[in-house]
Length: 52
Image (cartoon, rainbow, N blue to C red; front, side, top):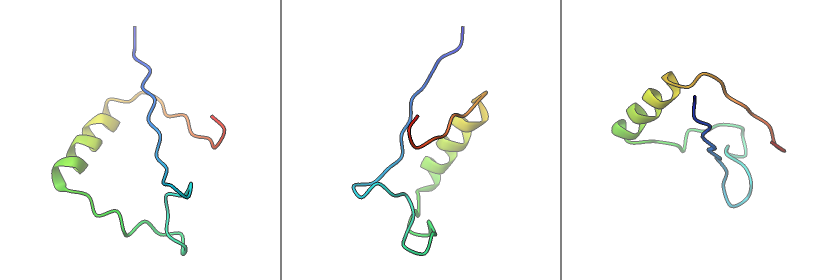
């Protein structure tokens, strides 16, 4: 049986982008980016939605 993992990205103001719609401020460490990429590769499905 598979796992269900709940992961939510947000900020205090409720947005994850800058006023121009960019995300250039997210300069992540290389090891964090590698771990996130490995996690995404093992994921079978993503569910997105504001009211999910």
